Image (cartoon, rainbow, N blue to C red; front, side, top):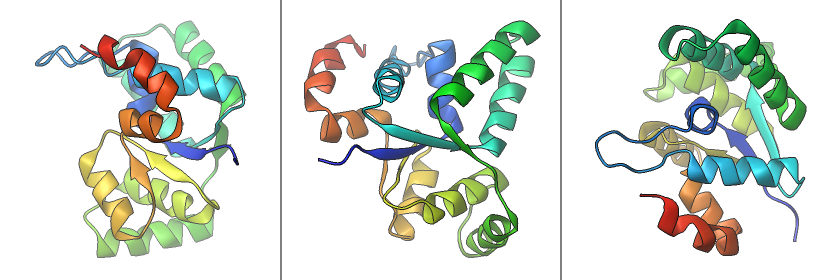
Length: 165
């Protein structure tokens, strides 16, 4: 079996970095992203993200999470060491513009989706239901982290599913 290839959206990376928990439900948003990152580090999954997602992560960690610059740098370095960071080129931006014209995408999601389209056999992993829906509209595979684990690594999902709440 070929190892899965995924494009990680900003929200999934933020879940993992800050160990986010849904304050309304107590759902541990970070558990499955953490397991996915362990799979990436073990080279059982090939993971991609976009430079624009790095911009978003840095912004969130600075402004909303108040992380120190040293901690942000270390976390970004960890992402660079484990993920292939795609740098949008002019073709990606033209494709993103077309996608945004056709679907209700924010600028970052339109760029992310254009990159997803440009990588062979890659699945989007996100928590953004609208983004997932738009990915499915263009026939791209898209999952929340829990569904990705459940489908591709059921033994790992079974081991953590009781720890999600």
